[in-house]
Image (cartoon, rainbow, N blue to C red; front, side, top):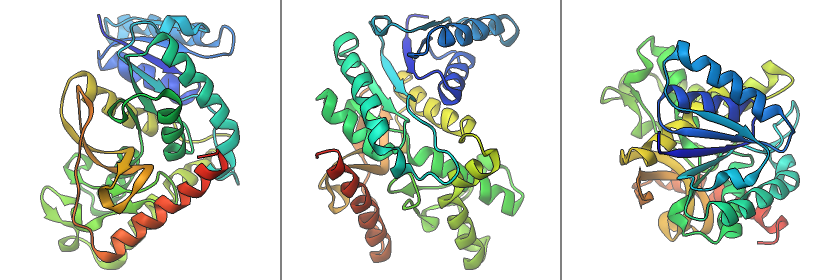
Amino acid sequence: MNRKVVVVGAGNVGASVSQYLLEGRLADVVLLDVVEDMPQGKALDLMEAGPSRGYPCRIIGTNDYRDMRNAQLVVITAGLARKPGMSREDLLQKNAGIIKSVVENIVEYAPQAFVLVVSNPLDVMTYHALKTSNFPKHRVFGQAGVLDANRFKTFVALGLDVAVTDVQAIVLGGHGDTMVPLPRYSGVSGIPLSELMSTHEIQAIVERTRKGGGEIVSLLKTGSAYYAPAASAVEMVRGVLNDERRVLPASTLMEGEYGLEDICIGVPVVLGSGGIEKIIQLELADEEQRALTRSAETYRDQLKILGY
């Protein structure tokens, strides 16, 4: 493979992203972490799985940021995971320092790369990465609504006992408790949800989606979700590397869209070889717009803590 993706952070999310990239035959992978020998061990393990899993891509593990050179895309998963009772906001200050260091190294060693942020709190870290890098806004974006929409789709499929691949869903807003699922833009094979489920059933799924990450944290007790976040991130990576022009929700910089300015938040975009190629502006009902604005204001308060 000639394409190269760097995954920063070799924890559960980073290792899973690496595995899905390899199995999808999307790119050669560099798994980077500051913990000595750990990314090397995971990379070797994944490389040795190649003969059985049938992927030709290669992976190396490293502690050296210089191995980022010539990367087309960098996925940032580094940071502290949420623990039971810990909100995404609790992670703010500690993860901001980690993101700053990672992005400064991207600027030095991979200045042409696209940057996909997965670290929490997602929307704030995406903005922080964008401002630290000074890259054009189309090259720095966050994995937000893809994961939330996938959770929404899963709960709809379970509720209706249908194939999850036939479910469509859109989720706007911040990646957290203030997300804004849009049931009226969601359905099954073109059939609106309102034709298939009661208002009460839909609202229950909306609430479960909002609390989806916390539900997994409470069950695991010693960590947070990683399979679904990793799969969602790789879906976005594939959209860029293969120029798929996917319409996906992503955290991106607002410049007047949806009435928002100078903040990163999840909205539907066209994702292709140019990164964020277009923001799609939906017609929102008044309550949906208010919910999106409230979501944005939550993260604006956090940005002030970081000096923005």
